[in-house]
Length: 81
Image 1 (cartoon, rainbow, N blue to C red):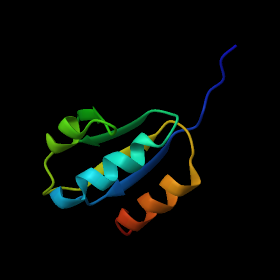
Image 2 (cartoon, rainbow, N blue to C red):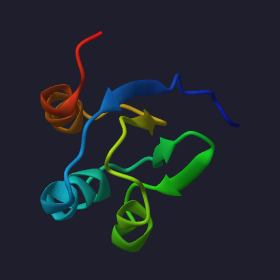
Image 3 (spheres, helix red, strand yellow):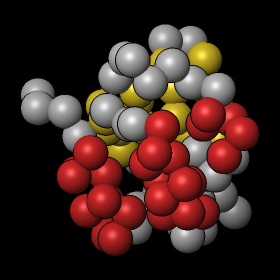
């Protein structure tokens, strides 16, 4: 039996020196987390993948589940709407 989980998205600004902490936080989640710039989407739990993104632009994080600690962390990185 499968069930759908709503995805939560955040627009964030990430600096290269924050990547290790970001990947560690995403890795604690028991669901998939993607991070994207335009159409380039990578696994947020992959340090190599995240470092391949262009940090000059806002990034989109898509969480395929919910974790309150990770949600709070992302809110700290989120851009104003």
